[in-house]
Every structure is written in C-alpha cells, then in structure tokens.
Length: 313
Image 1 (cartoon, helix red, strand yellow):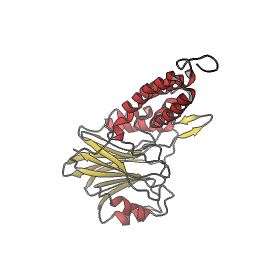
Image 2: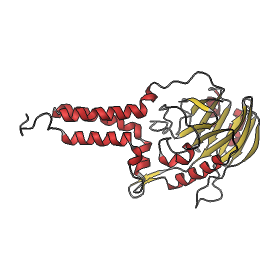
Image 3: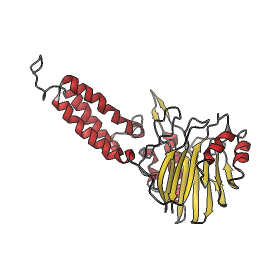
Image 4: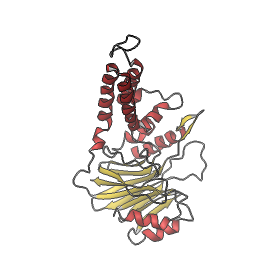
C-alpha cells in the first residue's frame, strides 16, 4: 500500500492507460482519423518511434511500483514487435538480378560530381536522381557518362542506366494548382537481360507540419493518386518505381501506390534527414519483380541519404 492506501494493482492507472493507447495505435494505426490535420498519416510516418515510449513508461511504472502499469507494457511490446520486429533481423534474401540506387541529391548540393561518384560505388545498374538543377546537371552527366551510357532527364528528375532506355516520356504527377514548370516525374522502358521493365522515377510534393494545418500532405496525396493511376495503366509486366515519395510505406496517403506495387521487405533504412534519419521517404518498389533488400548508403552533399535496393525478376 502507498500513503493513500492503494495497492500495486491500483497505482499507475494513468501510465497504464497511456500504454494501452500506444499499443492500440501501433496495432491499428488506420484507426487514427485523418480528417483533422491528417493525424493518421503523421502517426503512420513516425510509427516505429512509438517504441521509445516503452522505456519511459517502464521507468514510470517502476517509480510508481505499479503492477498494472508494468503489465500494460506487454501489449505495447507485442504490437511493436508485430509491426517492426522483422526489421530488427532484416537481411537481404539470397539471389538478385540487379541493384538500383535512389537518391534525392538536393538542389543545394555543392559537390554533384562527388555525389555521383559515391553512388557508383554501390555498383548499381540504374540510378534515379531527384532535385537536379540546370547548373548541376552537367556535372552529373559527366561523372556518370562512362558507366551509364543511357540516361533520361525530365524537369528535376533523371534516370541513368547501363541498359538501353526506350519509350522515354514525362510522367504527369502534377497535383492541381501546381504550375506547368513543376515537372518531377519520368517514365522509361529499361531493356535488361532479364526482360523489359517500365521504370518510373518520381518526386512527390513535400509535406509541411504546422500548428494550423497539421500534417500538410494534401498535394502529396493528390500526386500519389496520379502516380498510382500511371502505374495501373502500365501493360502487364515488370514495373519498377524509384522515387522520393515524401512518405513512408505505412502512410495511408501512399495507398494508391502501395496497393499496386510491392515495397521493399521490412527494414528501417531511414533516409531523411541525413543528419539524423527519422524516416525512409525514399522508396524502391516493384511489380512482377521482388525487392529483396534495401539499405542506406553513406551521406553525400544532400539532406537525404541514398538508398540501394536489390531486385529479383
């Protein structure tokens, strides 16, 4: 009994209730409504970090000497492991056909040539870049020319490939209200030894977090819907998506894309921000092929980390 006559079972009801709430969000993130400020998408974006509540609640439970609060931590641990336990032991499956690299190089990158050379160290067969600027583009072309003789650029996105590229065309993912100069998508057919693949390179609009707007993802969600329509319109066969989607694969705003393509297997591989990565918003997905592993590469001059993925036909 404590000074107020409460047993270990009656103490700590508030932290126990908080633990139950966290467990519910982890187990059923889709139940968090998106109507007000898109809180559901915000929770899904940073869902893995809810695991940090466990040590905090554990300390509170021990200080309060509350059996109820301690037991309430069990569903939190179970829900977190159910969602992300696979990422703790994630390893690339044996056997793959190609390696691809996805990187938002940043329009403020001061060393585009060095960035390009760093990406080539992963020995990918294809490299997708976003935030290409007219001043930096010649440096990327020069650095990648020898190893990647085939490339396509549209607006601020580009694709470099060791394989021939055919049927290159813009990918219209411009959300309503954005100007005609907003060109952040392209589509090309890569002719590989394993078969042809429709490769989409995309950079969806950024999101903003504000006290009045909440998680401002409306433009990104509209662009994701257009990207999903473009993927659905592809003929049967292999499709590969490389992009800075400004969303994690858990975010419901990306559902038009994730419902049509298979994401990489569970792996944290957080890519943004480069200084202290909190989420992987750079994605590699595929249809009629399998992304068997994804990892981050060392930092470049960008605020994103590059990601490398292995794909099996």
